[in-house]
Length: 371
Image (cartoon, rainbow, N blue to C red; front, side, top):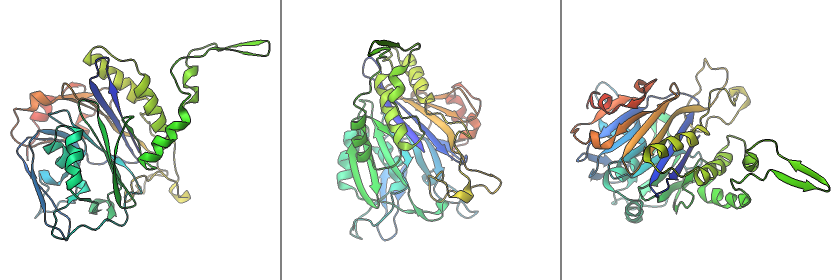
């Protein structure tokens, strides 16, 4: 499961935060893609779609295939889960189990984009949500079976944000792609995004003003503590509950007047979605619902499945700074896209190398082995 949201400071500058929850830690790689790289997206039965990156990209990635001695992984095999380009555009992949299904027909002569390549396609070529929306009107996108997930079609949906605060959703539901403008700037998982918006109609009573006194008959009731305003928020870690809570926190968190304070405020907001191991569990023998991403197997040594926050990301879309915290850290390592601009090659750093690291880690990434 995942939670993402956009936060605006007092001057309207945008900051983005997201968590990623799974039942196991995967071989995530932090990758810097310099501008000028050539990519190719391939779907069987269609010509390859080729595109060159105009912008540098910093992203958390996963390999799209299993490497072999004859075919080691290249940069194009690293698929973007979360990223930002040097224009302040972000791209996020979030779990969505009902994505797969019958696809709309696309002529065999037409080049199509694999959904697995949406990250490099969007971040490498566009600077705003409006540009991505316009390009998608002409570019067919199809799901593909993922080898690493045992052949399951990409069980994800996708969100894009830009430095203006605009937000956009790309969602496959049972094989059919729909796009949405996202007026709340929040995304979690299923059901479909339009359902989440309708569900927000059930929470028109929410506000952040404590009502600490009321009269019942002749009895004057007084709340002895602050915080009663949040009593109506859903308390579960379900996708539905997290969507409502994320919308509330994004709306009512105090609007910071300084960028560093805004990043800190966003970090506090995202702490509300940080999930320790064991908070909720499923026993595999009982057919629980923790395997949110189909195809991910449960370790045989584990007696139960428990989702936890593998990593949390913050993005400062105006200053082009990317922050990352792993489960084994309480502080964030930060990366400055401006400082990385001098890099000419692809740099790959295992996210696990950030365990316990805090502060500016741009030089650490620069020194990582380039491919």
